[in-house]
Image 1 (tube, one colour):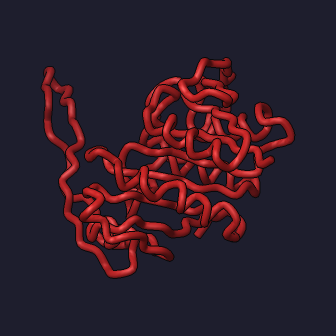
Image 2: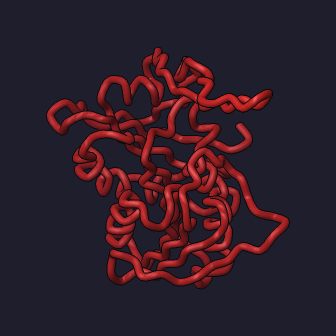
Length: 237
C-alpha cells in the first residue's frame, strides 16, 4: 500500500486539508504533517537556527496519522518524509490551498514551496489549490479523478504537478485543461495603502488589485475561462 504524506500552508485546522486527506485515503495510508498556524506566502521558507516542535493531534478524518508542527510548510514536508512517515512516503499531496497558485503568484506560495521540497527529495508530488471564494463543488467533483490520473504520471527531477480549480459553478466549469504552462502575463496590479501614521512611522498594507490578462494555454487562462488547470512546475527552472 502506498504511503502518502499530506501537508498544507493554511494550518492543521484547514477545511481544505481535511478534504484532501479524504481523497488521499483512497490511494493509500495517509500521514498528515501540517503547521500549527497559517503560513501562506512563505514560499520555500525553512527553519534552520532553532528547533521545530512536532506533536500528534486528533484529526477529523479517521484512520490517518496526524501531526502538527511549529515549523513552516517546507519544514512539515521535510520532517514528515525524513522522520515521521516510516521509510518515507511514496507520494506527497499539498493543499487544498485556499487561493489560486498560478502565474507570478506561485513564487510566494508555501503550498508550492512545500511541494517543491518534496520534489527535492525525489518524491512524486501534487499541489492542489482553489479560490478563496465559492462553494468548491468543482474541486470536489474533479479532484479524485485528477489525483488518480497524476499519481503515476511521470515527472522530471525537481518537478511537481500543480492543479488549480476555478471559482465557478459546476454548470459553468468547462472541464480540465491539461499541460498548462505557468503564465508570464500580468497577475496583480496595485501596491500599498497607508493604514496608520505615528510620527515618522507609517504603516502600509498591501492591496491586491487584479489585472488579469492571459495567454492561451497558460494556467491563468484556464482559471479565467473556468477550466481546471493542470500543469507542471519545476524547481531551478
